[in-house]
Length: 348
Image (cartoon, rainbow, N blue to C red; front, top):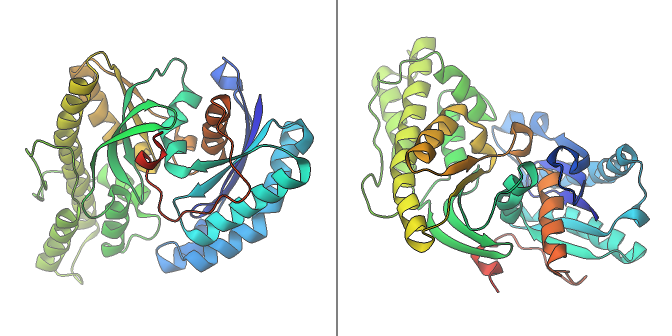
């Protein structure tokens, strides 16, 4: 079984063809990503109108290049999978309408995928034997939540952010420090050269017996420390120390919130043994090390995607489509794009 996946929910135009095969190294047949990083860098963030126009310009060549790389024609596909939400609606429409056109013209089954489900199932693409149910930490620029993944299309939300997503907090901190975009990678690099104990930042919701997150107070605390120093007097070492202290505080928050998430998960599924990380922030090595410590302490197997599959990509959408197709889930051509679409709403 071979499925084409199309992803256009934010600022990556991506397509991939995956196949249902036991060898994880052979599952991705071809994969292309065009990143709009340079187009959005002057604005220190993604501009929806620019993103949509870029998707429109690139999507045809990305899909054709993916087919060429696989030495395949559309007629050899078993299904076409596409992100139908959540995301920036302009980009979602570009990908969805393209997938619908290909599906209708070649009579190929269409599978409309929830973008978050793509992240939720990526570990099953990249690793063997990631069995259901598992505990999922989904951390990205737009999402930060803990879920129980019971099976394909069945999710239970345990906790979510009550304000900023973690990736957003990284990017906004970087912007305050004048570090450029995307900020998360830059903050992580500078943190390696700073003193993580120099600044004491708050750990919102610490100790509360749930696994919700809050990062707006942490972001405000960073601004206050910069104001104390004086924005015009901040040295390179000050910036490195702020980055290190910020990232260390994030680790403390994740450690505390995950402790409660694991307890909630174990109460629901006493025999559950897998902890999975999905989303772009999952590429952060300091956060990974914290989660490895937690997993070991709680006798859980920790899975996270390879770096190239952490951020938005067509392979995860193709794989989510493949898993849904195997269950008989096929979409109608009148499926509407969804700017907001929770994973729990997929439950049947």
